[in-house]
Length: 214
Image 1 (tube, rainbow, N blue to C red):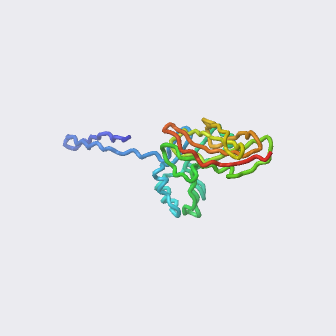
Image 2: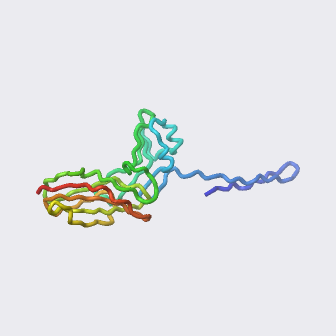
Image 3: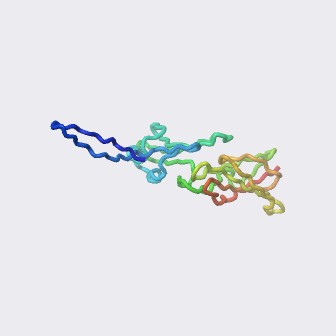
């Protein structure tokens, strides 16, 4: 969108009118993009960040931060209002003392972007985890997917019978990257996750395998 400067008319001493030509002035682009679920910096600018940049260079690239502290700046966050455990997912930059040393964002190792969702990465439980508590509750956590929000998730569970993974079911419309469920028996199980948005589905993640001993 552009802002049009109004035409100005200057009256000369001789009574003649001299009209200044209209000028098109570009309106500056917003530094932070705001949606219902996500406040984020300009992704194209974020990808240009480099370690050891000065605070001034970062400010010129991204604009002023949303939250500014001595050693870290925040440029937005991803939120899930109904999440059982409130885990912060933020766009953070850390400085030491005024040089950029750490860049963090909500999407793990995936580059922030719009579009079809990226493949989720399960970070809990670790593969081949063992549990000995009863009832057999377990919780699964994964890095949020990058892409156009809102994004939901589907989980695919399998249970082991006779040393083969045969039992299978899918949980749909998981609203945030965290799920708590129950396991049917003292046996091995495994789970994988994929992300869904209005543009399609991601590929399935790698399986994470776990087992209950009681």
